[in-house]
Image 1 (cartoon, rainbow, N blue to C red):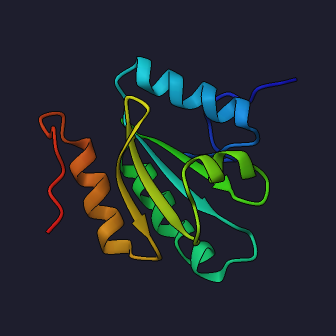
Image 2 (cartoon, rainbow, N blue to C red):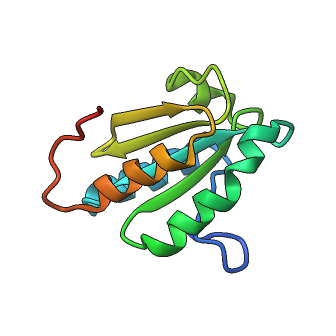
Length: 129
């Protein structure tokens, strides 16, 4: 089995995860590098999930220190189940393989706050107001 290197399609900075093995590879590598992961769980048929792709890509372009992953819930059901994804889109901030924050629904402002906070190397805990 061929494992995709962590790079997006074309100029994209978002990596589409193709398998559970690839998910493990990317999250392990990010953890080993001390790099946060922001994961977008969505579906090709979900309009609200698709509507967040542009914002997710924009954040990935401006935050190269974070690994941005996209998981299609229909393609990799095992990972979606493991993280308890029940609605799309769902976003996770993952540090050291632990979920730090979860956002359910299309909320570009909250997603930006999550990404900005995770990019701060001095940020140890994210406070949700």
